[in-house]
Each structure stands twice: as C-alpha cells, then as structure tokens.
Image 1 (cartoon, rainbow, N blue to C red):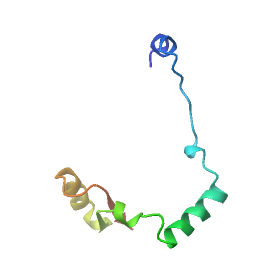
Image 2 (spheres, rainbow, N blue to C red):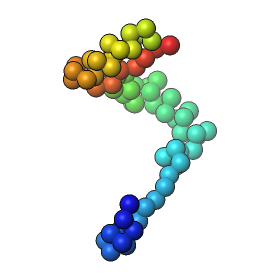
Image 3 (cartoon, rainbow, N blue to C red):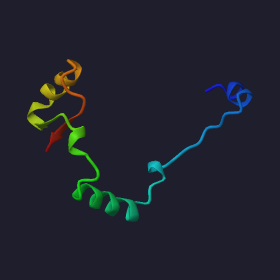
Length: 73
C-alpha cells in the first residue's frame, strides 16, 4: 500500500468485519429467501464431493470443468 498514491488520488481504505452483516437479522432472512426459492444458492455449486475425493474436486476446478465444488464431511 502506497500512502502517497492513496492520498493523491483522494482514495481511502475502509475495513469491514463480516461484511457488516447483522447475523441475528440477516441469517434468518437469508434462510427464508432460500427456502422460498428467491435466493439461488444451489446453482452456485458445480459439484459435491466426499472428503475422500477432495483431490478429484480440486482437479476438476483446475481443469476448468467446475467453478465451485463443495466438500461434504
């Protein structure tokens, strides 16, 4: 980080913890949206793999066959 460049460009650095979410409010709301079909999470997952197949899951991403795999414990 170059402080002079940030100051000269009138930029600023801002931190955020957990995206500034309000867990007690946001999580129940997001769960409701998912259950109603308004939050499409399943479409974000390309594949599900057991832990014993973690290497295959990683390889499929490296080969470009998958974007996001989930490892199921």
